[in-house]
Amino acid sequence: MHGKDVVLDGMSITYPNGFTAVQPTDLTIRAGEFFSILGPSGCGKTTILRAISGFVEPSAGRVLIGGEDQRGRGANERPTALIFQNLALFPLMSIWENVAFGLEARGVTRRRRRARAMELLELVALTGHEGKKPTELSGGQRQRVAIARALAVEPAVLLLDEPLSALDLKLRQHMRAELRTIQQKTGVTFIYITHDQGEALTMSDRIAVMNAGVIEQVGTGDQVYSEPETAFVASFVGEANVFRGTVAGLENGMALVETPHGRFLGRNPRGLAEGAPAMLFVRPENMGFSGSMAAQVDGRGDGSYGNELEAELERRDLEGPFVNLVMRAGDRQIAMHVRNEGGDPPSGRQRIGFPCERAVVLPEGELARTGSEMAEA
Ligand SMILES: Nc1ncnc2c1ncn2[C@@H]1O[C@H](COP(=O)(O)OP(=O)(O)O)[C@@H](O)[C@H]1O
Ligand SMILES: [Mg+2]
Image (cartoon, rainbow, N blue to C red; front, top):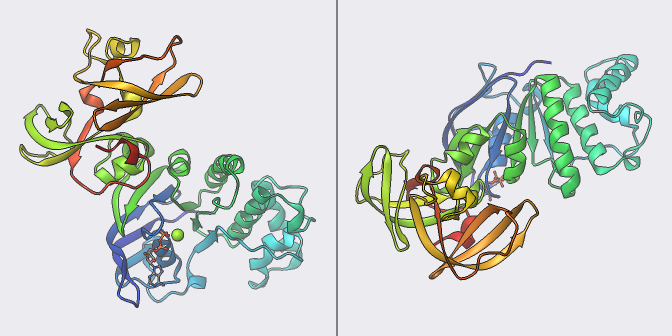
């Protein structure tokens, strides 16, 4: 099997009722890549998949697969296969017959169909289950049968629309590794859609983060997590404390932001100018207590941080090696994720802070409704 690249060239999609679900988008997904589209429910992820697979035509722009314009090609004529959440296996057929189903219509003999099904069942680690019926398999095993069935027709691009969302948490986590292995063995381009950042971060070569019909950022998991380019990406991927304010000064690629909780310095990747409304983001794991071990390592060398404020402990949740703290500073809460160094939790007023290089200053923008809500000023 060979993966092909997928290019969206200025593609937008407006439904017949006039609603534009996908704004004009330029995106290149490389051949053989595990590429995720991550965003909240309703942002347009499924609509993009439907355009790639041929169930909806772009209103403007083009979809190219392996360099070929797909306009006018129906779903059956494209080198794609689609898997979604509520997969339907044929209950009366055996597992191998389910896998080989798509080959019968192509005139492949029964003997060849069975041989191909056995190869694919080996690929998804289901050898020995070929004679069973779907009801005799677990949810995760059925999902793997669906993947084998989709791969039977040798697609160059496999489109997966939240395929794990019906499974329980443990199985979902197990299936992440399985899917990644299957993708690497086949070399097929996987385009994986999810609203679950954990899935996207663990499996993907690259991720597109999408909000309200717009792809806001494309990058590796590390890039979208550590170098977010918009307020939405910073707040949707992972947890973040947000300080709203105004840029009060600039120095060496950094911006000083005046906030109700103090003046904080942070990286300024978008080049905000003095006077600009801004949001400063800092992750809970980048916060620490002034004078602590962490501050000695991460701070300015004297046990203090570049950015500090006073706060009081409000809640402490022990995770084991780490502790999640909720601190109160005036009218707001601040989340901290610190190493468990033993001993009593800090009480009373504390100086907490974060290194300037671990804070990012971005243009004011819409925040994701998950995660950062608690931590917003
Ligand atoms: N056939 C349709 N007609 C009109 N609007 C639609 C249609 N299908 C989806 N939408 C709207 O387009 C937006 C994006 O939907 P969808 O692509 O399914 O989002 P996601 O997969 O990210 O949850 C939603 O607001 C949805 O209500
Ligand atoms: Mg969807």
